[in-house]
Structure formats: structure tokens, C-alpha cells
Length: 378
Image 1 (cartoon, rainbow, N blue to C red):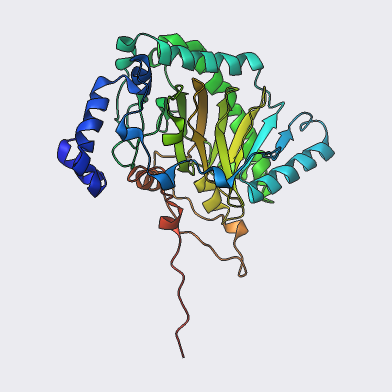
Image 2 (cartoon, rainbow, N blue to C red):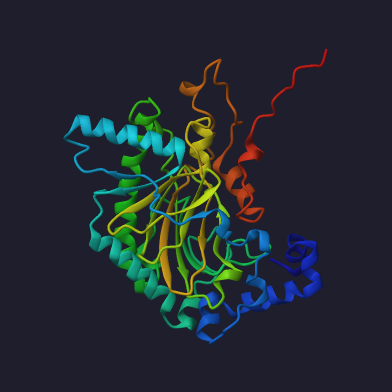
């Protein structure tokens, strides 16, 4: 990104406080947020300080035992009654909250722990080795950077990210992955891909479709893994780990460690998604909301910064088929005269391009809604 493009993408007020210069200086270190922490800072740089209205507002944060639904998948293959209950629970969670946690999902705890440890090793390895992966090239399959929307957002988030993109190719070659997390990542990718296919089957049944419908549409055809590292923050009240956003995918499966910080917006209140050992967090993405014609909801969520860290998480975004371009839209079987289509047809590339054209806290759903024709005034 050249300087003229960079300036055009920043808020107008940014140039008044040398924000462009500060962003460029941070970017050129290729050391990310961890590099700042390792330098011993006690105050966060200005580029991370968010406007007051974008900070974590404690006035609408629920500190209670309220939790997103927890769904136990044990026995879904052998017990028909339990399978029906699981499908009903998934349906309610996807309609009401858009978030749920799954237990007994079939991925061994050793694989989950191995993935977390591998991501930790990558981010905590020698900085010069890590810099070899630093890139903002969206086409690159494996890359590391800090803040995908660094030049679009009003403030940077307190995290670094290793991204593994399987949007075009269905697999990643071992030698393309960082050596320190290679074996654990390959195993996790294989296991979570299988779980994604299972969840798409159950969610299809929750929509009263044939079990294979969403899989046949290619909803799990492309995957992107974002492996976040949130260092301890000296001033967490001034910034965010991840801004509020929805996911530009059909489905997200999230592995998180035990530190916490993930919150989901429900009934205009932020609810903590408490870490549960051995569980995985699942949420509906924008694309599944579109093809379900708003039957399922893609909920806003965020991660608060924390004085304790690092927090480590890995999100697998099931983004659907990108190449060759495939047209998606509201599923025909869900459309009736009483329930007409709300969204226009789209390709995954169209949606992802729109998502990356602005800060992550700006939803792209409205950009793909059909224009409702108003009745003429008499």
C-alpha cells in the first residue's frame, strides 16, 4: 500500500496528529503488538487508543452467569432422539443468539492444546524468524501481521495474527507452514474441517433442509484460519483486543484458551463467552444469515483487552467456494410468498472484498440487501 492510498483510507482527522507516520513506523518494525510489549512500554501508543464511543462500555456488560448455549454432541450418531434434541438446540441458538459452544465434538483435547501451544510458539519465537512471514498480501496463503484493517480503522486493536488461507487451494503444504507450529496446525486443520462438515449437516436439518444441502452448496469449501495472539495490555481500558464485528463467513469455529475476553451482543447487552475446557465456540456468519434469509443470525462480538496475557485463539472461518466464482443467495426452499428474499445474490469474493474495504466494525450485510420498493402514495 503506497502512502497516497494509505492517506485516502484514513479518517480525515488522522493527518492532524501524524497518524499516517505513526502507523507506518509501527508497520515497518514487523514486530507487531508483541514487539511493543517486549520493549517494556507502560503506556500504549496513540494509534491504539480508541474513541470513547468505541471502547468496551461496562454499562451494558452483563456480569452474571448468563452464558451462550452449550450443546453436547455426544451420541448424535446412535441416539435418534438425542440427535433431534441437538438439532432443535442448534436451531434455537442460531436464531436467538447466533453463538453456542459444543462439547464432545470429536476433536481430542491433545489436538486442541497442541494448536494453542503451536500458535504461542509462533508468536513467541525469535522476531527475525517471524518477520519472514510478515505480509498484507491477501493472496498469500500463510502470513503474519498486526491488524488486517490497520489503515481503515479509527484505532488499531491490541493483537497480532498468523493467517492461513485455504480459499483457493483445499490444502496447505507442510513446508508452507512455520516450522514451530507445523505438525499441530496440520492436525487441527484436518480435525476442524471434519467438524465443520458435521455442523453444516446438523444446521441444514435445523433449517428443515436435507442433511447434505449446505455441504452440497459448498458452504465449507473455503477456509481461513486466523490465529490471534493478544499480549497483556498495560492500559486495557483505552483499547480493544478485537473491535465489535460480525464474521464474513458461513460459519466460524473458535478455539480459545482459558483467559477469556470474548463477548457477544445479545439483546443490546454484552455477554461473556466463558472459556469451557475442551469446548469449541461456534457462531453463525454473515453468509449463513443471508442464505437462510435471516432465519439464522450473525451476531456482533468483540474481544476486550486485558492486563493478563497472552490470550490465544484460533478461528476457522468457513467461507464457501471462492474459485471458480459461485453464486450464493437466499435458499430457494426457504423462500415463500410470506417470506420473500431479503438479500440479493452474491459471490464470496464480492462479500469479502466489501468486508476488507472498511474497518471490521462496519457490517457489510446491509450492502447486500435488496431494495424494498415502497408503495406509491395516493
